[in-house]
Length: 479
Ligand code: NAD
Image (cartoon, rainbow, N blue to C red; front, side, top):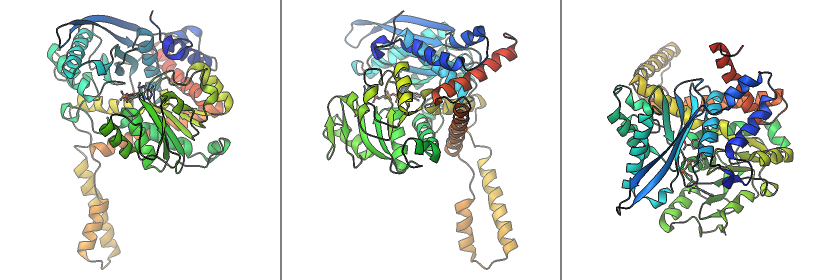
């Protein structure tokens, strides 16, 4: 089996997820057989297929889809395009999806797919051809479908790839009525839901904000309550990292370091995210941003002095060989698996607070769930209630005004009513559902971590183990 050891220099990625699982499992009293059933990866499809390149040569493409758990259906998880994609990595990422969905009460099993390519080496036409072929392979083996397995974007993919997947799936299925629910993260015009693009980063922000609201926890770290003024370093300015940085900055945090694959930049006084992104578009690099110090070796940015470190690129970034130099007080795992099992132990011993991936980046799958529901119900969220809510609020306000019998002029009354009487639109509903989910899950994890006197990752595993075990027990499979 190919492994992810090259990322971490330690155990393979899937082994590491299982080490952390075992730590939590030991704090429960479920039988070993049940715990094993939760932990194993149910099915993996490894495929290889030819791609005719634009110049007429042929590449053989390696691709995978792992379905970790079918305790709930469909299974759900992103599709990653990256050079190091391998079977161990998709199994680890699929396992994290299972635990993630359980933590945020999204009724899916976990899955993950990937194609081992560097997207920068392929033209748009080539990417389209290989995405369509991959989808066709998945459909042929029943590894995709609204009630079977529902992919979404991950590293190296986005709405464009999801639209290709939908189009290909629609052309080979008989289930055309619900075909749009075969994939999430689609463009809004193709059945996507408003707010999905930024959902993971927004969820990261909600999680970090919630954590910083506990004055007692912050005091332990030598920090003040709240996000205002906290210094932040973000690694990876892709979908998740960019949006996490955006919302954290908007909430008053100070972005002091930003890292991309070409290097990193640092400015203690703060970096303006929008202007850094413009600079990168214009020059092709974040380096040489006016007023900032260049850090040529991007990984060194992880070691910068800061309150909150947000790794938002790939797994295995904080390992036993650099963990001792990490100075952040909070590590907010926007990426999946950025901290290895060995480094996790050391960070915890150092008193660092880790917001674990399986909770913190669950905003993506939460809003994907809203998209899937929208596709199956064939109606935009809020379509039937928005105007009704607006009229109801208007009636209440008019009644209150009549009761008050004030002499305020009618134009002013109208403008006040206009400002407060409105129904929720789809984006309002999506964002409020996301916020509620992230806040609720944080409180649950924090309470479990206090109850078991353990770190939040272990508490997150305990939360998901309990929820998944309950499903198996209710199925009558385990006593
Ligand atoms: P992306 O492809 O949009 O962005 C990743 C960014 O990281 C790219 O800009 C890339 O250049 C940069 N990068 C790569 N290696 C780097 C390095 N060594 N140092 C600095 N920057 C580096 O991917 P994404 O969707 O933002 O995913 C990032 C992470 O978040 C992954 O671990 C993914 O599994 C996880 N995640 C994504 C989603 C989602 O909705 N997209 C949901 C949950 C978790």
